[in-house]
Image 1 (cartoon, helix red, strand yellow):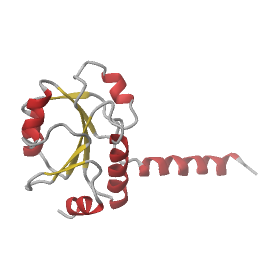
Image 2 (cartoon, rainbow, N blue to C red):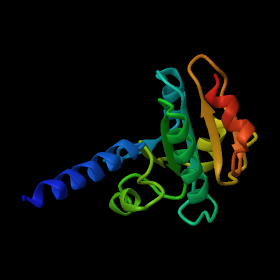
Image 3 (cartoon, one colour):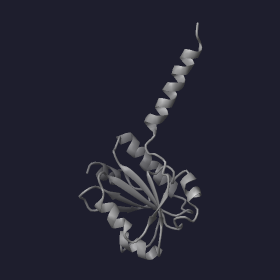
Image 4 (cartoon, rainbow, N blue to C red):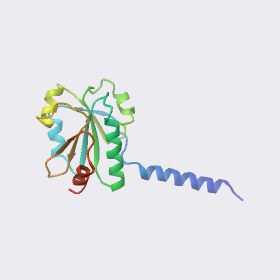
Length: 161
């Protein structure tokens, strides 16, 4: 009796499970987040998106990204997850950012390209740079921002839009 066939089928089933559970494709490049990016992201929105503003030394940001990935997966949402690194510039160390476990789970990774206070102001004039800063976007809706880990109610409101 052939013993390789059951092993092959088990391996294929395992790999199919990995593909089915992947929420996002790893980003391939670090994009510039400049003074025009925020308006362009909102105007070009075709599906819900969540943007996590982070810094490389943020202790709480990885948990926020993990929680959002988990919620998007569980709810089977067609949503884009983006991270914006505020203390790195595009081209500075893109390879490290793309390999980083919490940035690598996003669909898109951006890095600030310009003065951080001015760029934060384009997102929310009252925001003073506290991270993680999470902004929920939905086509045709005003953005909703949360400092820190979003509550279940925040995620529910976004998912139901």
